[in-house]
Image (cartoon, rainbow, N blue to C red; front, top):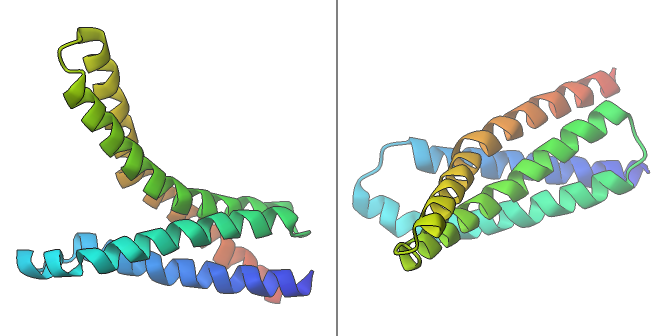
Length: 145
């Protein structure tokens, strides 16, 4: 069990580092050319963020530890996975809405879905990640004492 907890901690801290890099890319001001040049790097970081989030969920479910720590770790991993899924589904439903724009019902359904996934990816997932991360860090500190 101790080995799994060490792996979970390492994955968690790597996720935190990648989160800081991704947030700084989106919030910091760079010239347009610099942001465009960094886009492949950010795409790779987002993919790694997704995979590590899934691994964190998997290892956390197998971990035998306090329920609160498990909940915070799963929140952190789920928000990491949810971010990329939200972005992909947002783009999928936007494209589907463009294709089926002439069918009124489908236009409104795809519009609602692409907006919902956009809000999930851009607002909900980072907030949930921060809640899970802060809770996990507090639980790690409590566990050390």
